[in-house]
Length: 480
Image 1 (cartoon, helix red, strand yellow):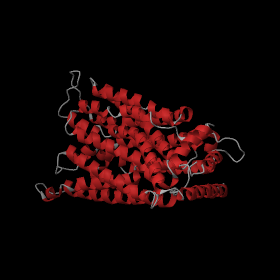
Image 2: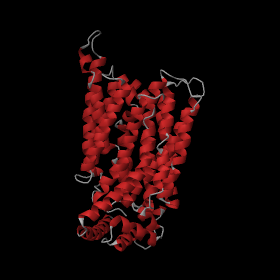
Image 3: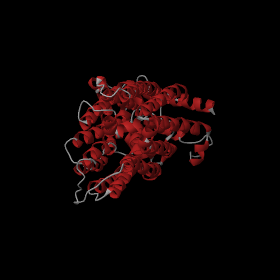
Image 4: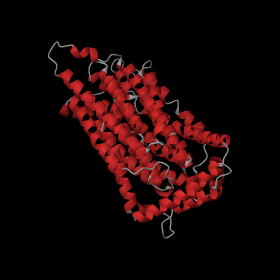
């Protein structure tokens, strides 16, 4: 089986190298124009990720404001228990379980473009429920509905970008949805410093209208068109994406070959049980497990609560959260230069190593503060340390911990089963995220705050070794 896979990869690379030879004869101006087109399409697809990014961190500024202003837009007062505050994060991820699973199959039926358009509906309904919630139950229901859209975007955005981008720049292009997610988070954090929680929910709904407008300009994925038997449309789209000098027919034939079994029948669900597929699924699922056990999602969504629990911050917690998000943008920009140079695997290794160092150090600092003698204010002058450690951890997360498992879940598998297998992997990651978010408060009670940070850091140490040993590099490898 491994020999067959190696042979297939060599043949694919030969075709890819032939395409690259054609591209090498392409004038630089034509290449720039093509890549700008691909970047533009990736940006339009990334609007869904921007809206997703705006949805995820809403509890951080929203709950902080609700603690001092719990009046609703309908005139009632709203109060959330500690468990319900945890649920504002975990319920969204619970909803994304169903969104990820459903979108994987919907994309296979109606295509990437129409699924992208469909995502706007649960985003709209979810934000309306949050903004006009008269009591906690309606607000939590809104977070669940938002999760349906978030789960779908997790699958649709990355799959689309990977299928339209040139192999040589696929890593850079896949950065664009990730950048959209981070910028969406920045949008929510900074607006949360000046808006009340319900007004923030209304403003967070505005980007979804750009999803609908942007989707009108998106062509269907050429990979989806090929496996759907629509070769004429696929040829026209590929000619536009790859340029007039590219061997479009060879790419179509390669897509056909990689999405057919050796006997000539089409790949289907029975192929999920094949060794190469489930082994790669296992690697991706474990990567998602380590992603959540190292605190990545907790630190992103509960940034303000983490800063408040670590001691008096040097800045207002909401403002400090916004500054930390700027560091996340820096992490995304750094990854732009790394993913197609040193590869996905090494980025994941570096990311987990940095996260481990930052959180182990943060745990040590909080332990010293918690155990300082009464009246000892030695550590007050170092109250900037938790903010810096969190900034480093989230910066590291956007280099590899957060995006790489999603990229691998799409790059590891051929088009015919990509969305279904990717959705299964993402569903597993979502289950792990729900557990991490819902267990945040209980784990602090069990392990203490420094103990929790040491647990997260220790997990990243394990993840560093796992990434070195088990993750297969996909840099510059063609995807079917």
